[in-house]
Length: 420
Image 1 (spheres, one colour):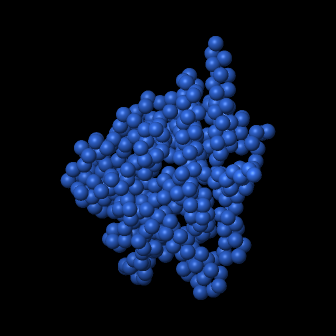
Image 2 (cartoon, one colour):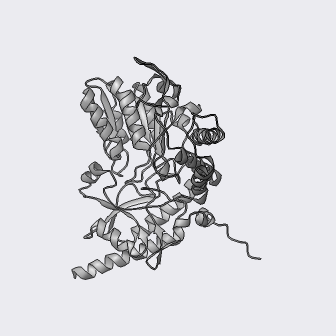
Image 3 (cartoon, helix red, strand yellow):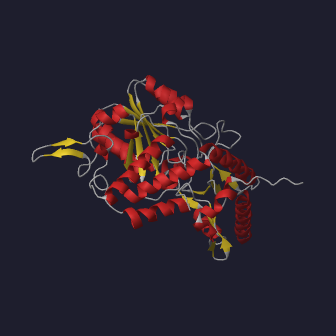
């Protein structure tokens, strides 16, 4: 008797993603751009449709049945996100349009009111522009000084330099959990613990970690954490900020308008309670409800299982890339990464522009990213204007990696032949 082979997560879920069933030209779509945005399962699409077809009404503002149902679904999504990242209190979850807005909320509400001239902000050279530019604006407004943690020899977080840069002047550390270019998983709990010894606050950009591995804000013990829904199987236009309750209570509102108030008079107003203090105006109701559906979907699969499967994909991807001598990848290799590496590879091919490579691979039905991935300072360190990036998710397969490597090698051979 032959035992049936257990299906991988990808084999179990492929049918849940209608977009992956299509062809590009006459080639099956291979979607390797999930670090930019993930695809959406039918459960999430159904949640969007159900809201608009059955419950469409504004939240928190009506006693009629539709408003009550919409409000219940909206607030249930907050509960789901709170459990997903192990928040202590549901009021610690603030819905935003995206992670960029969440970072700006902290920048303008907390940093602008707490930083003084010569106070120091520590960032890393691998940060996404969204975790650099707001702090540059705040530094310009307050006189605070930004310092950057560089890379180690393995092209990941330079722990020794970080230790040397921390001082009593450090008021804020803002660091990415998983680099969208290098793929390294930064030791955020250790980074936070050391920063707290200097009484510095810590913000974690978890856009590339929350969708891919278990994230526990109480274990990390950071002060704020941000993420975007569209990278975790939810729609665009929805993200969230998590913050420690006592810190959020002290922060003034970021925006004024409906929903964030308790009472308004002609000469003054009073704040509403958390988290509504930071959710001015009509929110992205359908998108928030669908974010809740995405959290359910990921939770049902199991974040540990997702992470374990993606580690297998990562090892396989880098094993195959290593066999292509013209490829120069960035960041630590899986064998160097210690606590693991994200399922993405940023790379360049000698003599071939990343955008040309991406265009030619698209003719083979393979979608990868090319450009600077919103990490221009990092690419300047490498002396590269940009790079190609193949980023995977739990719905990708080993066979897709094989097809990608074949197409990559054929493209390289084609260009090499043209140069001869």
